[in-house]
Image 1: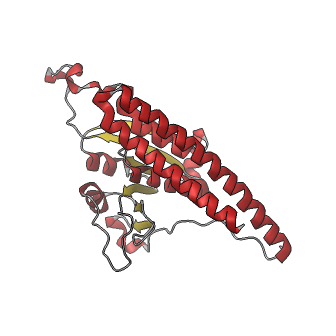
Image 2: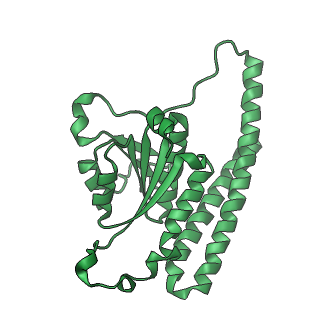
Image 3: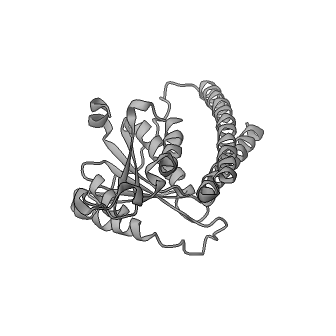
Length: 260
């Protein structure tokens, strides 16, 4: 983690658990860090008790998740964030213990703690969104920094809800998500339109390439699901998540290319 970056915009901690909601939260955090000149720290917590060295339990008894397979969600999240942030502003960690306790601990000194939230597609505007899970509830109560809960659906669920740290109620409102600066007043209307069209063209091209990469990622984990039956369900979740990301990116690119 670079010191200059940490001082400029702080550190954004993201909880990773392998679900599609995680990838949405990772992308939001990476984009926010890019605008804040901050860094992103990804944390994958394996929910199992931390055993003391003198406990007498052999390491092999903990299962094969200590190997590469246990890091798959973390690697996937790093790939997502790596499309947005340079390597020097991205770090990751694999920890054992209670997810809520570990994330609350990592929130100390952080600018934001970002968590993903699954939100069912097709939720009507009048229908209440589902409540956050137990880990998010615990973090909302105990985190030492503002908590951002990012939803996977942009229907009735807000895309990102920012909650202040419990002990910071008198310090003012929580920091809003930062937005890129608008063009200066000196720019003429034709220049602004040309700039916007060029930016949209390049963004569509990036979205198409991104969708292709996600397709390859989905295919790779689909093959792993067949080759590794004992991990089939785990790999299928990642494959489906990557496929969904690719589908949405391609739909976005097609819609904006048609209107451009």
